[in-house]
Length: 152
Image 1 (cartoon, one colour):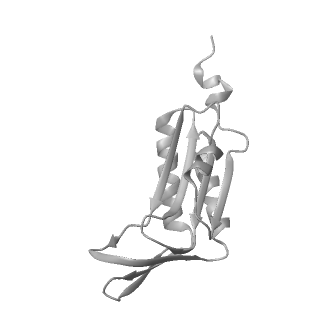
Image 2 (cartoon, helix red, strand yellow; image 1 turned 120 degrees about the horizontal axis):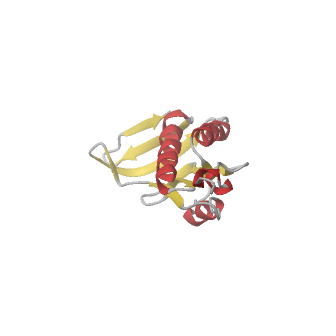
Image 3 (cartoon, rainbow, N blue to C red; image 1 turned 90 degrees about the vertical axis):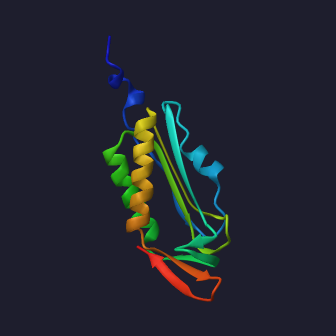
């Protein structure tokens, strides 16, 4: 009998990057979840980043994201690194730009793998590298009238 690791479903998919996008319109968790659906996946991990009402002890009134023209290309590069490092069946990442309100979705990423541990690890790597390496900047305006830029 063959080991379970020899089953095609245990191997990385041929073309696992299903969705990479930067959008000025509201994001959908359902869209990302559907994009990473795979019959061979036993684990799907999603990360949803939302706009919170505070940062660094100050109340946030407004928030906006902007990006460099290469940002989507950088997202794809990071996705390719994750796919090379983990046995990913399907991967998706979308990030919002423009003005957002408290509670709005800023980023949604998803990864499916044959097993949950791999899915968790690959999703964590994807979002961490995206936040550190993709040239997307956050502009926050606080209730006291101060503002700050944050970004890669």
